[in-house]
Image (cartoon, rainbow over all chains, first blue to last red; front, side, top):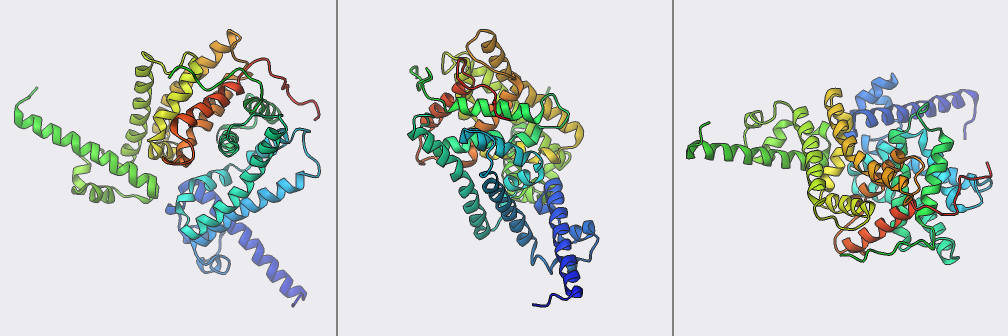
Amino acid sequence: MDISPDNRTHRTKGSETAARVRGAALRLFAQNGYAAVSMREIANEVGVRPGALYNHFSTKQDLLKHLMLSHMAALMEAWHHQLGNPSASDPLDTFVRFHIRYHLDRADEVFISYMELRNLEPQNFKQVETERRKYEAILTGILEAGSKAGVYAVEDAKVTTRAIIAMLTAIPSWYRDNGALSRQQIEDLYSTMVRKSVAPGLPYEPRENG
Amino acid sequence: MDISPDNRTHRTKGSETAARVRGAALRLFAQNGYAAVSMREIANEVGVRPGALYNHFSTKQDLLKHLMLSHMAALMEAWHHQLGNPSASDPLDTFVRFHIRYHLDRADEVFISYMELRNLEPQNFKQVETERRKYEAILTGILEAGSKAGVYAVEDAKVTTRAIIAMLTAIPSWYRDNGALSRQQIEDLYSTMVRKSVAPGLPYEPRENG
């Protein structure tokens, strides 16, 4: 491998460009929608010629897939990283706080990841779905283990997973810094709600009247 | 007013066309995104000439606004209609079941209503937001009244409203008829989770360790 200074500079510039392309694509897709954005516009935003994009991403579809997969990869890495120093003693509490913190500053990624699923070609959709399921499986595992231990009461761990993730993932769509609630208050509030929602020994039974 | 048979027929055909335009626009926007769909494509889908669309909707923006506002109006009307015959004795239970039932067969409307908010012009966005807040205020009111009565324990009724609605509104994105759970089971499961999430007298307090 050639690691002469010249080539290093070239590779660094190349990966810098790739990062700027990803950033510009993320912003433009989130703002205008994948379908409405052209590779030419992304290139303009980055300040390079359209041809330079194709050194990094062969198609706009490739770029979208890359954005979604790298979002999922970074999320999984962050989860594994925090395991060494969890934020709470209850794993459900830890998961809720992690999910909120991770997504709160990534509103565009969240928006794109949900919004543009329909624009992924089937093979790419499958790949992204596989990664998403791995992440969901973390929460499902926590719920199943807790249910077995009698700490939680969950009727269907997979559906409960979807409910909790939907609830948490919507936060970046309305949360603003300097709003009525601090990040810590948001975390506390959602963690309490989520843990109560799966608490055992509550009086509610499936309805009787209908 | 001219109510001669000829004019009646004409008006009926006109509103039939408008309904078909709305239906086609809804499908196409949901499938391809607002930005990627032209008035010409909508006309093709309906089987009329583009000019015929403009008798009903002056612009594509007008059509989008109309879709969102009529979705909200129909939702509010359905809520008021069911008040005469609520599905449960607990108003929170009633709200959860209503929201799930109403949205379960309207995946396209739900998708559009969230997804295409960014494509509404500011004035139209404001109008749609106003209607959305009216609907959210129903749930907030239920939570506030229940908290006052000591039936629920809610820290922040507005944030809790957003959490519950996000949780419920995600169901149409994954629910399929003939899946593992029936509609009734979905309703029961979510109603239990939601009511537990706001139940008083649970051991969870905001975390101590951090």
